[in-house]
Amino acid sequence: MADKSSKVPENVPGPWYVDTTCTPCRTCLEVDGADSLIKWNDDETLVFFHAQPADAAQEAIAEEMMAVCPTAAIGNDGE
Ligand code: SF4
Image 1 (cartoon, helix red, strand yellow):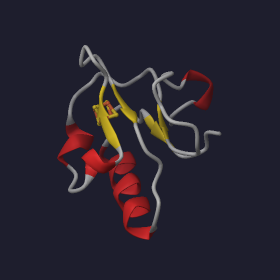
Image 2 (cartoon, rainbow, N blue to C red):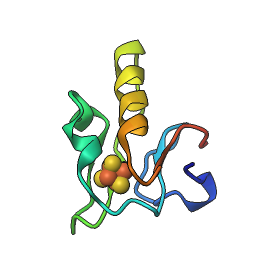
Image 3 (cartoon, rainbow, N blue to C red):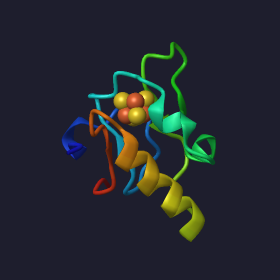
Image 4 (cartoon, protein in one colour):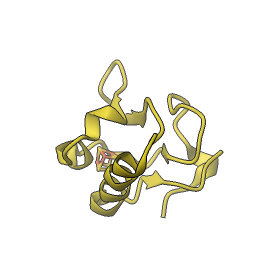
């Protein structure tokens, strides 16, 4: 389970975040529409939420990314 006390600082504020357990493995980026919410940092050592879901379709994308992440680095209980 992701830990909101370990969010990577690049995440935009809001409930969805990536924490420091991102390896990064790219699995979440293979979800259709992932790039509308998540992208690499500059040196490609992790991914982060550059936007929060704005509608139900994007919420579904975020939920799917959370489900497929093998390290449980994606959470939705942030602030
Ligand atoms: S699936 Fe998880 S560990 Fe892999 S890149 Fe995405 S957030 Fe990082």
